[in-house]
Amino acid sequence: MELIFIRHGEGEHTLNIPNSLQTSDPILTDEGINQAKLLRTQFPLSKEDILVISPLRRALLTAHYWSMGINCKKTVNPLVSPRIFPQVSEGRTLPCDRLLDRQKISVDFPNIQIEEELPEELWANGINILPQENFNQLAKQFLEWCKQQETPKIYIISHDGTITSYRQFITGDKLTRDDFPKDTGWFNLKF
Image (cartoon, rainbow, N blue to C red):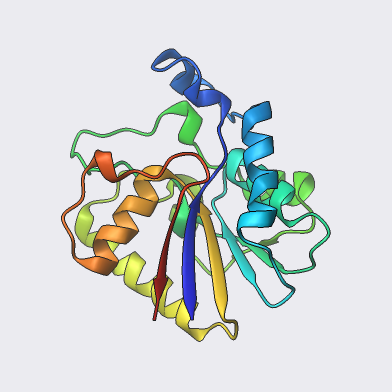
């Protein structure tokens, strides 16, 4: 099986940092839409593939533009929602990183399944500021879920800090913010 972590396309929240980080529910920019569409040639999808998507609009839109016309399984999961990296004890969730609620997702993205078998706390707050030990337990749980899926590829549409957190957990390498993927950048793992 192959896991491919892909960062969402360029979002509005990155255009005028730090002020733009205060934007609630940012969408993709025109460039972000183009980046998502380019994923079609970089990573052609098949109906056997699974997309696991962060519950933020920019990730959901990336999945939407990338998977248009492909009937693959798409599921939203807070275990790939934003995560501060490196983790800091006084961290807080910025408005741009607040999760959409499940009702909003089901109305705005009706063709995407919602992972319901997770605690309400994860749907409310995600993994953004969880202590490292808690994240490690959830990361292990998520990777076990991935292994149980009957597909050769799982694509995970997520965020720079989240991807780097999973990458560090999986490889054991010490990473920094310099290791963040760019917009629609990716990291893959075969196991």
